[in-house]
Each structure stands twice: as structure tokens, then as C-alpha cells.
Image 1 (cartoon, rainbow, N blue to C red):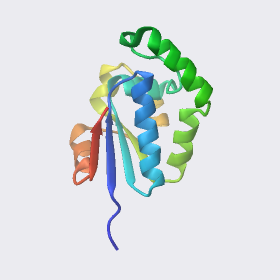
Image 2 (image 1 turned 180 degrees about the vertical axis):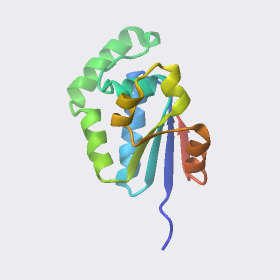
Image 3 (image 1 turned 90 degrees about the horizontal axis):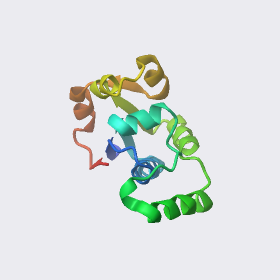
Length: 139
């Protein structure tokens, strides 16, 4: 039997447009049977741990267009990204890990982080998991 294809996302950004891409790509890959991993760093980690994936905070660079996009997202896609993500994670094909250093740098409480992710891992372990992945994205 052929090994499952591996799909890895290195999630760094905390703006909603990027979080939306991280979640939708991860749940799609997992739903397609890919062994899917999301590695959380910096602002993506902070928003994930604080259950803020559904807050439509966009970068100021988007200006008025960002405000319109926020409204469209809420109208068109009222489904919670958090709910979808947790549902797909329960199926077991999607793992979410926090970077040890990022937890410390973002001054997050380790127990709270551990309650939201599959584990807190160092870069060496994250890179070992990512090794051989058919797809690796940095968002």
C-alpha cells in the first residue's frame, strides 16, 4: 500500500485572510486523505490559542477594501473556521503543533497552548515531521 501524501503548512501570519487560507487548505487536504500538519508560529499561534481564528481582523494595508471583504466573508461564509477545524481534527487526519520557541516568544501560557494543540514541539521535530512532504506552504 502506498504511503499517504503529506501536506504541511507553516502558519505564521495572524491576519484573517491568511488564517482563512491556512484553515481551508488544511481541512481540504485532510478531507482528501492527506496526512496534514499545521505548525503554528507567532501571530497564527496566538490567534489559534486564544480562539480568535474567526475574528475578521485584516491588515491595515487593505484599507476600505478590507472592511468590505470582512463583511462579505461574514455574509457568504458564516460557518466558524474554528468549528470546522476542530471537527476535521477529530477525524484524526489533521494534526496541529505549536513551536516551542514561539510559545515563549509570544508569552503564551504553556498549559493553555497544550489544551488547544496536539503538542508543543521544537523546530528539529517539526522539520522531521515535514520531511518528505509532497506539499509545504509558508503562510
